[in-house]
Image (cartoon, rainbow, N blue to C red; front, side, top):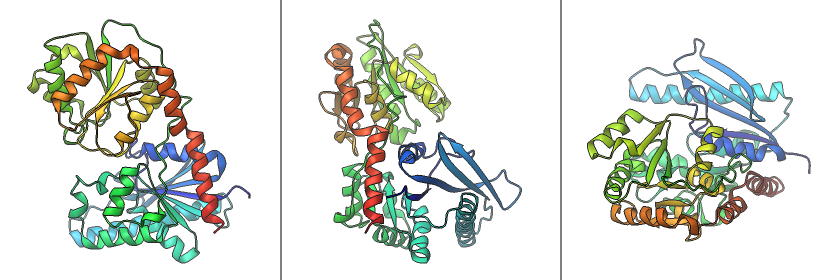
Length: 394
C-alpha cells in the first residue's frame, strides 16, 4: 500500500492567534507524519487580518501546515453571529482544502483525521457526504467527563450534531479509557467503534534527566493555572502546611496562563514567596529542561483527561504526585508516583512528604522505559497508521 493522503483537521490547533492551543494535537500530527502524506488544515478567526480570509502555509516541525484565518465576526446579534461564524468557518475550510489540493497536486484524500468532535467534525461529515472520504475522530475534550456539566448546558441541536458526527465516523479514538466511557455515557458514539490511543510524547526531546542530590528538592508544576481546573489554591494551601515542618523544597511553576493572578492567590493563602518560582511561556525544548532538572512533578486538578504534562514527566523519568481524576489512574502506579483524591489536601500533604522522603526508591530508568512503551511518537504513529489502513481497506 502506498502512503495514504491524510487530511488532518482540528477544532484546536496552534496558530499566531493562540500559539499553544491544541499543541497536543500538533504532537499527534508530528507522530503520524513520517508514515503518511499528511496535510494539516486548520481554520480560526482573527481580528488582525484586513481581507476576509488569509491563507498561511508552512512546514512546521516537518508537518505541512495550512492555517486559514477568517475575519472575526463582531456582530452582537446571537443568531446572526452564529450563522455568520459557521459560514466563514466552512468557507475557510473549503479554501484551505482547495489550496492544498492545488498546491500539492492531491487528486483526493484517502481519509480525514478529525481532532475534537465539534466544530471540525462538521467538515469531516460534509467531506464524507460529498466526496465519500471516510473519517476518524480523535477526542481530547473534557466536555464529556461526568463531573463536568458543560455538555448538559449545550443547545440540543449542538448535542444532536455531535452525536451525528460520531455516528458517521469510521472510528472514534479518545486518548483515555475514561474518556471513552464518558463519551458512551453521553450518547456520543457506540461501544464497538472506539480505539483508545493516548497522547504522544517526543521521547527524544523529553528524555531521561540526571538523578539530583540537592538538599532542596524541586517540585515542578506545568499548567494553564486556571484555579477551578488545576486547583492551584489547593496546592498552595497544602504546601503552606507542609512548609511549617520542613523547608527542603521549592515549587517551580511554568505556565502560559495568568501568573499575576496566581501570585495574588499565593499571597492571599500566605505561602512564603521564597518557596515558589514562576516562569512564563516556554518552548517545548525549554520545558523539557525543567522536567530534567526537577525532582518530581505535581498536579492536583479537579478534573482532567489524559494530561500531556504527566506523560512528559514520566518520559523524563520524573515521579508524579497527582489527583485521581479522568484518565490519570491509567497513567500512575506505585512504581511511578502517588495518587490522591481530588481536593483532599490532607492526603496531598502526606503524598508530598512521602515523595520528598522517598525519592531514592523510584527508578528514573524504569519510569521512563514504561512511559516510552506507551507514549513514544513512533509507537503512537504506528497505531494510527494501522487504523488508517483498516479504514481505507474496508
